[in-house]
Structure formats: structure tokens, C-alpha cells
Length: 321
Image 1 (cartoon, rainbow, N blue to C red):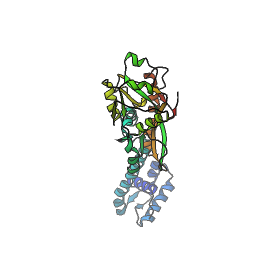
Image 2 (image 1 turned 45 degrees about the horizontal axis):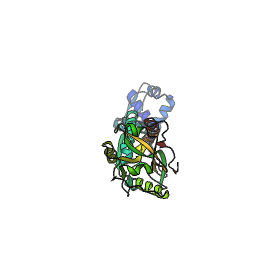
Image 3 (image 1 turned 30 degrees about the horizontal axis):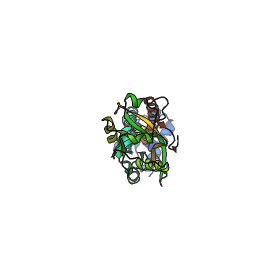
Image 4 (image 1 turned 60 degrees about the vertical axis):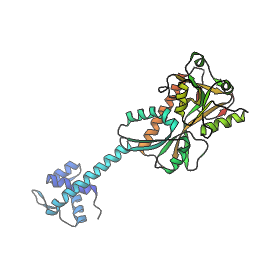
């Protein structure tokens, strides 16, 4: 039995109006088309639904029983159609994603605020994790994508760079520090510094790049979390060695970033997705907002530093200046 929605709509219209002519007008079809749909439905169900006369159409007891079930099916189909339309147009749904702790703290609050304004009815499930846990959690969880810093290629995942930040010395906005265009790694030798611990990916990248130049970083303090380094810097304990993009200036308005040179090192913030998997409309909408918001943050960081500063770059390269 293959009852169609067109047949059910015709049946419900005839039942309500007690007229094939009025039902056809309501459905915007011809009278003969409406009559044919009723005949097809009766043949499918194996019962007579209406007693027809020249004056009226009267429902049979079978039609009385069928009407409420037909209306439920039509309402369910209409609700499904509305729900799918809302999902397709990102007016409803859920987006689940992972974010490294640094990106979640420094970059994503701005993205989340813009997304919530544009898509207030979409449920957001953001899971902030340690940077080194980002890839394993992405592979093992139901998250649609992840945002954070990774290097190289990863089997089963596609990686798209969203923004790249120059490794910088972040310090308090004193007259002397603000006047600096940049610092070299050698300049750090005589100053207290705060760096990430050796086992973190960002520190490994720094140590490798400096070793290639015959140099070595010996920080005064080593920490695990980016926010810890920034909070310590805000208290005047030393210069934090971090990508400029990891400085949320609204949270730390007294701090500024100055790019480190010789060598210049950049670190990307990337979008990670599973290969061969389609993002939901809600996730696509979030990624679109993230691209725009992070692009705007480039301008924000440029404005926060001197005109000659190149604290934020678009290519995650190591180069000599």
C-alpha cells in the first residue's frame, strides 16, 4: 500500500468541505484530479470513503475513522518539512565542535557572540580542550569540526588555516615597550620571560626553530595555559612568548604584542574536519561566521600594534629577517 500525501490532502479537504469542487479549489487542482485522488486512495485502502450524490458528498464510517489519522500524518509531514527547512537555512539545529584552550579563550568569544546574534535558535556545544588533546578528541568524539593549532598532515582530517599569528613578546603597555617596532630573540636574554612548557606543541615549534639558528630559549617561568602566561604578564612578571593572535585585548587591555624577529615564527589557528563528511547547515553557518570574525580580528591586531608592526601574518612559515 503506497498512500501518498497528495491523496491524503485531497481526502482531508473533501472530508472538511463535503464537496469535491470546493476541495479542488482549496488545493488549486482540477475537480477531476481531486476525484481521481480520492478514487486512488479508496483503491489503496480497500474501502469506500465517500458516498457521492448529485447534491453532496457524505463521509462513510471508514472516512470518519481515517480522517484523524490522516490529519496527524499531514501535520507530521508539515512539521517535518518546516524542521528540515529551518535546518537547511540554519534557523535551527545544533553545532558541536572542539576548540583548543587558547583559541577558545582568545578568539572564539568574538565568534560566538556574532554567531549567537545571527543564529539565536541554534544550540551550541563547544568543548574546550588542551591543545595536545585536540586531534585525539576530534577523532574519537561526535564533534563536527575542531579549531586550534596543529602542524603537518593528519590522516582522515582536512586542515584549513583560518588565521596565523606571529610569535611575539607580549608585555605591558609602557612607553618604552610601546615604542618598540619588534624584538629579536636575543633581546629576550636579559629580560624575565614566560613561555609555554617544553612538552607543549607551541614550545616544541619555538625550540626547533631556534635550534636551527643555533639559539635557545631559557624562560624565567614555564606554564601550561596561555591565560596563565597573560595574567602573569599583566602583573609585570615578564614578557609572555605567544602568538599575537592569542592576546585578547579586551580581556588584557594593558598588554600589547611586539613581533619577534631573527627568526620570525608564525603559528596557525586551523579548522579541522573529517574527510568525506558533510557539515550540517548549522556547522556550515558557524564556520562561515568564524572565517569572517577571525579575518576581522587581523585588522584588530594590526590596529593594536604600531603601523610598521607585522605581528599577524597569513602564512605559517619560519623565516629569517
